[in-house]
Amino acid sequence: MSFWDRIAGFYDISQSINGKVYSEMLDITQRLVPEGAKVLDTAAGTGALSFAAAKKAAEVVCTDLSLPMLDRARKKAVAKGVDNIRFEARNIFDLADEDETYDIVMAGNVLHLLSAPQKAVRELCRVTKKGGLILLPTFMTKRQPVTLKLYKVIGYSSESDYSPKEYVQMLRESGCGRVKAKLIKGMIPCCYAIIKKTN
Image (tube, rainbow, N blue to C red; front, top):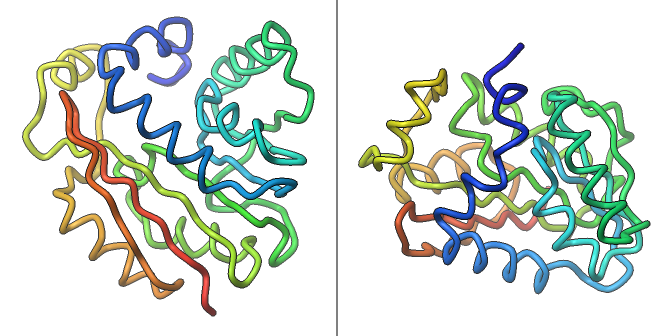
């Protein structure tokens, strides 16, 4: 059982500790999704970004490798009466979609966990329509906040601890398009990066 499987039951509670940043991250996501869009959310956890996108999207595909996380997301959808999200187990490196399938593709708080983040970004780019957006909000953990140290006690590990500048540079080097970013300040800051696909 992975770390993410083990914490699925209290993942939402742990995120609420950083509530102000989390709330702004979700507000930005909702604003960026066009009415009637087709959206893919990868490494979605319990689906917070998916639910934000679903308020305007025609369809959201909510994916994760962790089945317990997806099960929590599915139960939340039933409780909220949200019926435009479907749930699938997927690997961010191999999405099994045709090229240029989605208007919006999202991957929140996952790239720092991967040994090959640019490979993942290029796969996200592949399934995004030209002119579409790839939304990549990621918590900045360079300074090792207390909550992150507690996560590490129970098995959390990351491949990279980015500063905002380092994160944006990594995304630019993926070669997928123009990168914009906003730093959301708080207990654990979030660098909300957006790639507009140009290739």
